[in-house]
Image 1 (cartoon, rainbow, N blue to C red):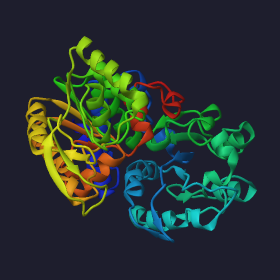
Image 2: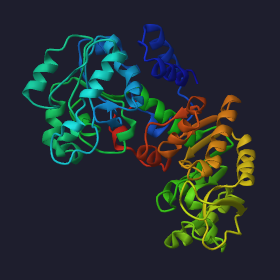
Image 3: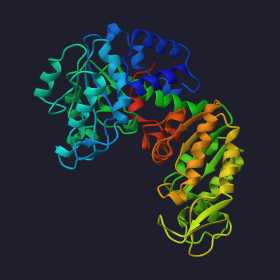
Image 4: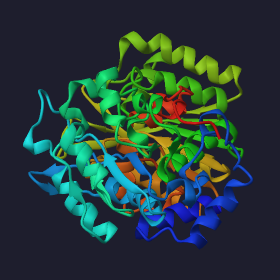
Length: 439
């Protein structure tokens, strides 16, 4: 996993991509990692020589959609994650313009969604001033791009200030692409969307390749499910079966073990005819849960449901709680976390696994009384990672949980994508990846 270690080190330290590091990356790509199939067989920025980059105007789609408190960035993880690709291009003498969306502007430009704070923060990591263009298209923006020096970075203003961005409108796409020579997509979090800045520009710019972050996401997520080392386990949590059933069915077909957690547990328990008190149950998906159990049996996949439950008399941090067997939830009480015996059984089941993918918490971990199930699973994954297991945290609340547990740096990979992670795990084609050049 030299490729992975290299990229993680670059993201963590935001260091320059030196020729030695370039050689290390390229040498790892000479023999594709296990699972480098279909979605992963795409050309990367590492496949472009310095001669192909020097002096070229490069449009890079980053994910700079960071959380803000007013104009203050509260978490710059996504900015730091984009630095290795940007530095590699800058060090090769390219003229680089990064584009991104931020938030959900409703009707044109809104100051609260400006990328100005991102440009300021990016300057700190790049080590030189990063100017913000006042727009992402137009004559003034083109003039700014044409006037860039080699090794200079600017950030284009929020692409979603135009409704045409999400509509992938051809005229807007052509204007966005017009000033540039080539395209790099490094925004995994939006790769499942066929937007102008993720998919449309590839029709006008060649080569169109992946950045290091996008390549790493594909290597882990697609690689683990397509050809991960066995035994392969998936932990699927979250509140509703309806939001996870497609990914759950896909994982059951490919995994040796699937652990069910979170609120969706109770639809499965109801499908087994058990009383669930006032726990969340999706009545319309009881038959779906039964079908999932049959699918697991038909595919020789061990489906693991909790044997005991932490229940509460209300959905609140100060609720009265107790632990009961999964088949003994009384009326008026709701399940909000796995019980200690269930956690022990899950930990035991995961110990022998060589690859584990986790998407969704075991309980309402935001409340301390119902966090143990989630945090104990996170600790288990950290422990088995140190013993050589590949552990992948597949976006969303799972990432928040391992970060809250202080164990994010102990996992093999933390995905930057929420919806994109789910769709890739489901086996869906991501438009922003499919549009890139073949390796």
